[in-house]
Length: 165
Image 1: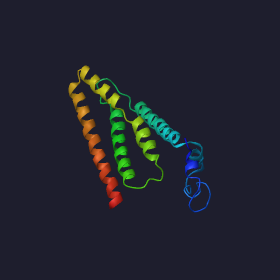
Image 2: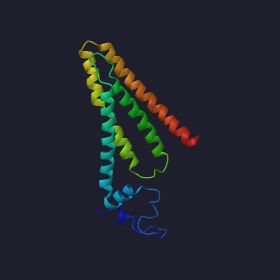
Image 3: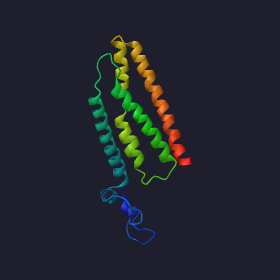
Image 4: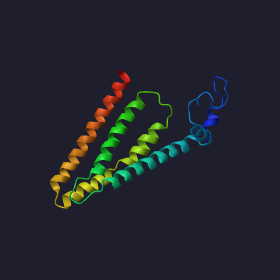
């Protein structure tokens, strides 16, 4: 499989391999782009974003532990934050030329994918219902979906307003 440097070896402005498209790019990123092929860069982007997202989720989980019969604030907050970030990011990156094609993978698939958690949301909702807190479980499920949808719409509108004024 060809490496990115092989595909873009001759810069049109004559400044040498990749020099034209690398101004303002940190040296570590330039080094990775020159040594890894496109598939490896995609995988690395997802892994790096996922690692940061998982650490953020774990931090929120530790800061806001769930007690039986209480509102699961940690999961609620990370899922709502993930919906907001993903909606804003998707809108911004689809309506502009991104500085690199790996932003969606890094932040969308990696970071937001690891930050948010449908499975924990599901388990917490079922646990609330099984432990005799059916109304709280229903309220949690409803509020989670409503808040996620609301912030997704708000983030999309904000991203477009920023773009189009």
